Image (tube, rainbow over all chains, first blue to last red; front, top):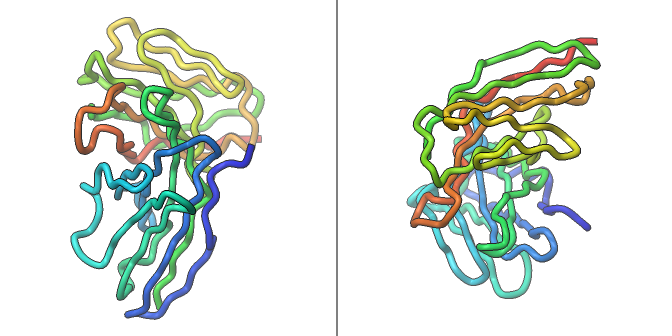
Length: 115
Length: 115
């Protein structure tokens, strides 16, 4: 049973470009969470999504960041007009449907470097 | 979510049991205690969780005090590969609005397993 998959594992962007990070949840999981880990810091929650719905985006920066989890395909975290401060590791986690145990299982992360 | 307090670092001899403490004195009756670890820069790895009773799985044991104000994660026979940062997190058992299901990572305990 494959775990949570994220791609790319490493992403380099120049300031002003767009970054798209993808997350495929574990088989049978319908909830996805995104976290960001800045250098030398702990993980910080960004957003919680179910298929076609954003449930909680209380940790998302107000501008340039967006997330989606379409009916088909992976969840996407999109960062527009990246700045150097966006350089971080972005982790995705998934969990089963609510009521069936909500333990979050994490992927390997995407390391974003903004030049 | 309730705040947790963990020692910043611990050492453990290889082959011995590693006992990692966590204080969560303000935990509510509907909050679980979760343990994750992060090896170097990998994605956090789920270890174990519990509500009131002690729990054991193939990775570790979780001992929760009767008043639920503290807990101990036990790795019965630590190996070098157990060197990691261990996070103790409390989280509500049932969804109750924005922020309910996010995992709040503190600084954790850096466990070093010594040969």
